[in-house]
Length: 338
Image (cartoon, rainbow, N blue to C red; front, side):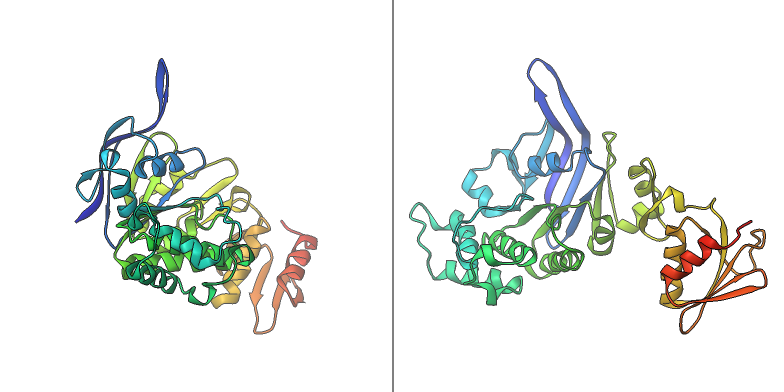
């Protein structure tokens, strides 16, 4: 059963007497409890505008959005705050607050005008910290936390609201690779364990493909498609939406590649299997080479064989051992190529 529903939704901006600027029109969307959905698309497609509309921060140009059956844009602010929580891209200035004190701010919709925390509020705060594996950070000053730790606390603050729906705008934008993967895995787990619906806006397509139950794909031309990540990849929708100058989305590999490394460069035969061969292929493609399978005709160019220790480069009758991929690429650059 859908928790969030949008029918005939048009988003964008009103411009006084001029016609509204419409980014997406006539969109039908749904989001169920326990589901993790990633909102993806090129820059300028309207992802943040859609999130702001679904958060009730701006009205739709047309259509209707309901949350648990109620018109989201007509809900009482306190009722909306109890049902919906957000984590935005910009860091929150928290002064000297400890992590637990920041999480406690999420109880504001439940505490009334006094702001006094009761036993059930303290329990909700402790549960939110535990849910993001941050109990040991409770009394650490927020300004002394790492970026990844601070984002966990921001998510815990949202969870302390006990929302039905959690919206996050680029929650991994300023994190390193390991922390981005950690936060995405955490959100996937929270959707399952907490039973809330989670919608994430993200530029990290590879992580979205790995963790999302469904994608909402904004193309930038006013259309919005939804579906399982694999269906959108196999159907070509991802390649079409992210096609841009100099870049191509490789549906087979599930990654962006430079057009300079697509077929058309000098041919190199690669022999080998496993992890080393996979990374060798990546290095060769990054170097602008067209990687061929053994037996394929490519005018008898260089051959690379993955060894147990290093690589062997064969150019005609000449063989050369390379101890690293860096040295292999240097040797290839110096080798005569037909």
